[in-house]
Length: 389
Ligand code: RFL
Ligand code: PHB
Image (cartoon, rainbow, N blue to C red; front, top):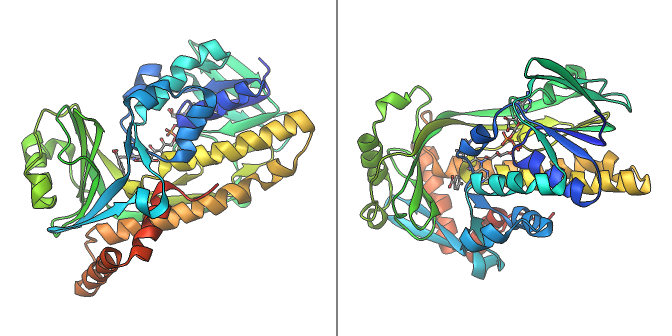
């Protein structure tokens, strides 16, 4: 098979890129390792910035998001009993959209056949070849048969564990990494949220986050040591711990219900540079990871895709390679600003096992500053809604 852009991965990056390329009249094929059901069962991001909602709008795949998504004009930072509201609307004139990652993923998958975007599910042993040449290709196995896709470019949208980043020789790339000494234990349950806006809570027992998927579905997280095992967290223990960490007025409103999903995710900051090697581009989690505290991961994937799509269209339509050459630097400039914000918010809101009284005083001082200074709140708001493209 031959195509213009072969995309590895049917996560948000690969799906958005595939649709944007098809809309511009280019050929693209997506190769995905998992089944459609598996991809749709992964509970991940909850908060979409305008960069992400704009892509869905521009693609004409936003009807359900407009009907079911929850625009949020603000969110809250809590420290013990104190609640600091970040009023996004009044501070920066923008909002974010609460529309769980599985929903736009489903909308993009459902729209693929009618737009001529082929997705190959359950592709095994995907390998990239000749990425330094002008004629790269991908091989994979499906149903016992070997397949090959020749392309002009390969887009590596295959997440942190995918093969694309590994196809860049060690001498041609550099990794930057920070691993945090804790993870997030998450629970999804069909109960009304405890608050109408998100609450990020710093507590002496550890961080907690109150989020949601809809007026009847809640998503909560608590910070746990990496040594914790899921089986040691029956639902009741998790609900009890959550209520201890949230500010009292929110804790009183927590409605309990059986877990629809429960998982522990480690926290990591990671960047791979550069994001292009020859005819291979990296986008989304394949190139960078942020801790989820800033709600930036999916939105960074969207901004990568926006730059990459424009670069590829200019290349195919006008034979203009400037944007292709500039892609990595342009994407990384935005990536590093989100890395900084996500790291800073994580540091401000979590309890680090090695921290002493000094570090805690600095956290309190920074939260005091945010509470008392509109300039400080505007800085948080500007980063949270997403910096300009
Ligand atoms: P994905 O979603 O990991 O998709 C990659 C796809 O590639 C496939 N793949 C392969 N396909 C073919 N062959 C192979 N060999 C392959 N290997 C892998 C995978 O099966 C998969 O389908 O990466 P993508 O598209 O770059 O999207 C990134 C986002 O998923 C991620 O950044 C966010 O989920 C991060 N994130 C959040 N982001 C936000 O913007 N806002 C949030 O509120 C937010 N909350 C979160 C999060 C991530 C979390 N976890 C679980 C890490 C909350 C959590 C708890
Ligand atoms: C979520 O709802 O899953 C969520 C929300 C905000 C975050 C991270 C995760 O910062």
